[in-house]
Image (tube, rainbow over all chains, first blue to last red; front, side, top):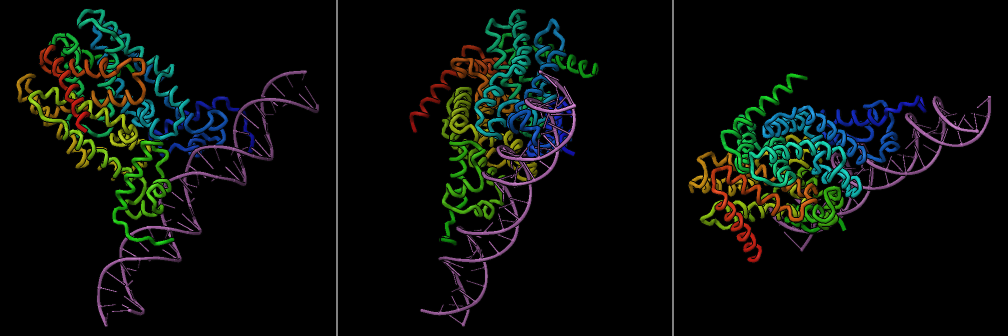
Length: 227
Length: 227
DNA sequence: ACGCTCAAAATAACTTGGTTATGTAATTCT
DNA sequence: AGAATTACATAACCAAGTTATTTTGAGCGT
């Protein structure tokens, strides 16, 4: 059977197949042939629709950022920005653990590591794809609300977001890399107190920061229930 | 010419060649054939000495941890543990920037990402190779000195080290992934204030934390001079 | 000193997987 | 309806990981 009926949703099917393979068998299982056969298409569609495996991976990462953006959008805006931010951190961690390889892909590392010096797709991806910006904007917005609330010292929301993103991202990658296996509950022992310490460092009162983090954890749980 | 004289230093030569290729052309350039020819040996030595490319990469990462351990050992133990820790963070960042792909390899991400589900080498590498433990011990020791100094709230040095490592590692990976290009000087604008915030969150006075970080930066500079 | 044995390294073959070239059916335009 | 174009399939090509085979030289017993 050659020259099958038009699909038109071939790109989405490829991206979905790639994400599935990524989740189930890791990036080494994502090859032109496997993705094509998993989506019931031929190898060529990868090249005609995307240009090659790196570009497909780039599209997969973009899909991941869109998912992250949607997940952040589902975190309600409450009157407690620190609770909102902690709920977002937990949300980001949840997505990362649901598909660690996808998370790797999204955050530059494995992109730089696995595929060629594709300066074009590389820059678009690692730096600031629109989908990434959209997800990141939720974080920056919450930082703005926090600065505006007067609970912390006045400062640039972008700088605060960069610091926050650093430690949350660092925590997530190390947890995924099994660096915290010695801890019973790494979130409660490492991530949460780190968030509290950071909030206190920003100028918040310790009790209030702790309460906000507990509120953030509850907020996160309530979102999970609502699925 | 076949069957050359015994080398005996073949493993080291291979690891060095792999590190060089990694630094200059990235991981995609590290292939059995390229490593072999760069070290003047044949493809087979990769398999006879290591078992395959993944195991060679594992040895390369291990070499990286040994280097990191040596670099940490060169950071003097002063009476200011926060300065020591900040100097270590800057040292880690320096090594990461000198060979970003090696850093990727060392910290699990690209290991999980690039190579097969090699559960054996994977575990040995990502979790806790002896070389990693040795490097990490320098951080934990400084955290212990900090707790002991009474400048911060009493707590487990391991937990503190995990938090510290999270944000430093997160910062480094994001910087390597070009996430901070918008900042003029990401170290001064993001890493240093993040360290100060964290110290304050741990219980230190803000002025003192700032002074320690400046001292740490000077300490780091003085180490660089002494090379 | 000579030849045997064995380890280590080389050469060559095999296999997998990214990529390109070519063919063919279906849709669209005139 | 017929031509042009598009979207997909088949098949060939080439690079790179891995395995198999051969060759070399060092150490050792005689």
